[in-house]
Image (cartoon, rainbow, N blue to C red):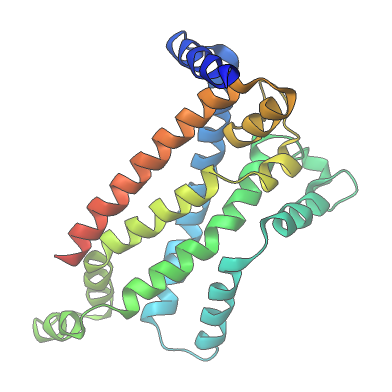
Length: 231
């Protein structure tokens, strides 16, 4: 068990010294997650709001598809995106494979159903009195939609925090589309897998501490948002 104790000691030393290799993996994870969540928010929140708020043909089928994609295998996402961005794929000319952008595309696809489904659920569960009150006050269609969006803002933020937690802990997509390239596309999760396989427990534990800290921060945000949404 001495190697575990030594690993923890060395891990704290790496973090205290701001080890460049360790924090390069952290930075790669942050950039990938930020890009993915931006894309998921820009596309997913309006789509989810339309699904939850609107009434149009095919809505239920789209809602079912979005909910089903919540369980979409991440390895399959990586495989499909790989086929598109590889040299032989239709997007091969853009050189996205084994880049942060390529990983972000796969991660955005992973986050999109979360943003869409949870946003739609938030709008669907909105108190009917909100619409009634807005209509009573003379709100038009646009003002009514904005009022509903405002009332569900905490639930929508909750959806994006959930998507963040899902994306930053992903391994398969990052490994397949990023290639786990040192200093470039090696993320926290892929670095932990690699360093543990090499027997470098110290770096793996150090990155594990960072991931654990992120998990605590995400859970704290989730709790705070749930409390605000329940008010």
